[in-house]
Length: 159
Image (cartoon, rainbow, N blue to C red; front, side, top):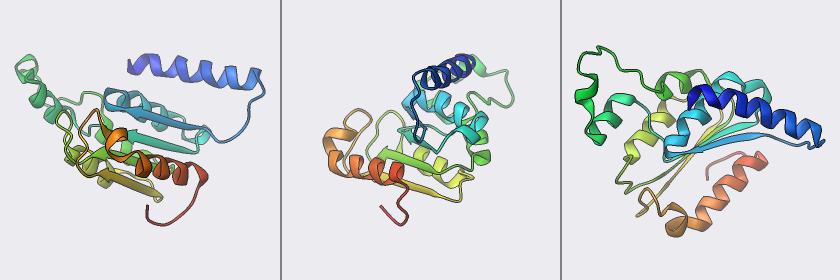
């Protein structure tokens, strides 16, 4: 998945160029998709206007525990996994973290950790009260859309 994110991104850039599309380019990843989005942002910052992470996870070890598969890695000293926590420290483009406060799959603390680790001097977050992993937009559609609109338009200040 991580390896595939590079040719997919490069192909998408070629497609945009071929079609003569212009404008700001953002990368967004949700849940497991946060890993390839962070990977793309980490490697192609100069081509992107910003990174949006929705319901993302920071570190592999906690996620493996939640999934109940730590036994598969018992002989591995330092499980890096996708390295979201390591890569986001080096990402300096504007970053928006969105997470449901009641996420039962990837706890909101993971989003807070990503926010805290983010190397972006221009970062913002939205934590939706009462929202779980799969009902973020139904629980907080107005705030969700407003946060993305404000972020992609480059408005400054708190959400």
